[in-house]
Amino acid sequence: MIFKTIFKKPVLLVGNGVRTADAVEMVHEFVKKTNIPLLTTMNGVDLAQDDLHIGFIGTHGNRIANMIMRECDLIVSVGARLSLRQVGRYTANFAPQAHLVRADIDESELSRNIKVDEDKFHTDARDFMRKIMNESVGDFSVWRKQCLEAKAVLENYDKQPGNYAVEAISALLPPNANVSVDVGMHQCWSAQSLVLKGYKGRIHISGGYGTMGCGLPFAIGSAIAEKHSPVFCITGDGGFQMNIQELETVKRENLPVKIFILNNRVLGKISETQHFNHSDRFACTAVSGGYTVPDFVKIAEAYGLKGVKLESYEQLADYRKWVTDNDPCLFDVALPEDSLLTPKIKWETGKISPAIPEEVVEKVRSILSK
Figure 1 (cartoon, rainbow, N blue to C red):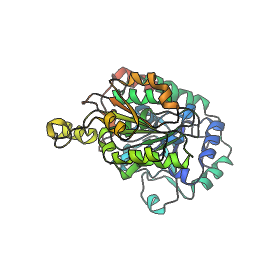
Figure 2 (spheres, helix red, strand yellow):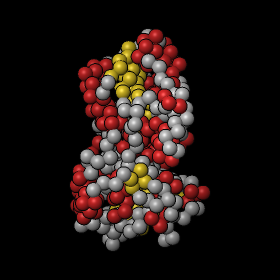
Figure 3 (cartoon, rainbow, N blue to C red):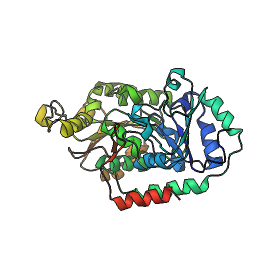
Figure 4 (cartoon, one colour):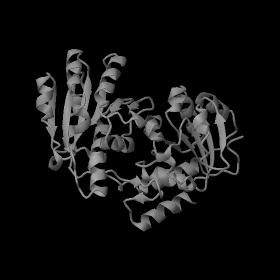
C-alpha cells in the first residue's frame, strides 16, 4: 500500500510519461477523487490545467510548487524521470521531509537513487495508476486547500512582463486549446503562466531537446492533425527566425495558426547568462553584440498573412476576433529587452532567487506546515 495513513501531505508528481502511457484521464480521476495536490514537470505542464493547476517543479518552476515539495511528506512520481534540473545536484536537498515513490517504464532511470529509502516501481504509468486507484486513499482536501492558499500569497511575486503577456494570451484562448511553444525565455514563462481552460488542451514543448525554432512547425503539424482547427503558437524573436520560411506553408495550406511572438529583441536565455556571468558581454545575442530582428509584420504580410505590432501585451484584448476566427495571423508583442526569468533555483544549493520578503516566505511556510 502506497498511501499509508502516516502520510498527511502527499503530492502526485506527473511527467510526460503519463501521456505516453495514455493515463491522463486516470490521473485526473484519481486527483479529483482524493484531492491530492497535482504537480508536474515542465514536460508535463499540460497534464494539470484549469482548476487542477498549481505549478511545475524545477530550476525555473513555480515558486509555490518548489516550496510545496519542501513541505510535503510523500511524493508519488509517475512518468517523471526526476532529472538534475528537478532534483538538483545534491539530492539530499530535494523534498527533505518526503518519502519518495517512483514509477517509471525506463529501468535505467530507476537505477539512479535519489533517496536512499525510496520505493521504485518499474512499470507503465497506466498500470501504476490502475494500482493506486484500487487502493483505499483518504481525502486530502484540507492539504490541497493549504497549497492553494499558499499559492495565492505568492500570486504577485515572480512576475515578469513575459508572464503577464502569457496570462493575457491565456485569457483569449478557447477551452481545450492546442498550444505550441518554442524554446527560449517564453518557454519558461509559458510553463509558469499558461493555464488552459478545460482538461484536454495541449501545450507542446520540446522539453530537454531544446530545439529552438520548433514552435511554428509544431503548430503546423497540430493544425493539420486537428483538421484545420485554430491552433496557437507562442514563440520568441530568435526562435521564430529559425523557421520563419514556414509561413509559406501556413499560407499555402490555409492553416489557422495564431502566432504570438514575445519580442524582447534579444536571445534572452543566452543573454541572461552573459549578463549574470560574463559582465554584459552580449556576443551575438543583443544589438550591442550584433543581433537584430526584422519587422515581423511586414514579413507576415509578404507571405499574405495578417499581422499586427503591439507595444504592450495589454493590446491583445483588442484583437479577440483575430484569435477566434479561422484565419492565420501574427502578433508581434513588444517586451522589455532586459526581461528576466524568475524565479530560478540554483541547482547546486536549491536556493530560490530572487529573494522575496522573509515575512512572505514565513507566511507560506506557516500555511503549508499546519
